[in-house]
Length: 82
Image (cartoon, rainbow, N blue to C red; front, top):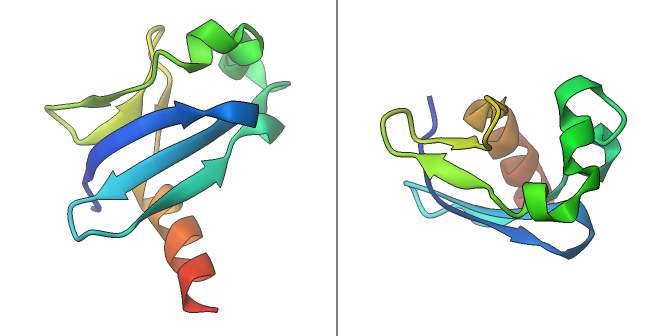
């Protein structure tokens, strides 16, 4: 499992992430706004409350939203290869 060491909300529902091996970059999460719990992000202030859970090294928000770090890593790694 890949471990997230830092994250920060950016404009247009993008999320900047850094992993413990040094891979970093931004992923767009705007496409999730119409899905279940992610509707909370329609209020951008809620999206900006992103944090790294120190116990699990995953990206998390209040209300229990968590993103799989392996999926995020593969997204970033796949783009950095090409």
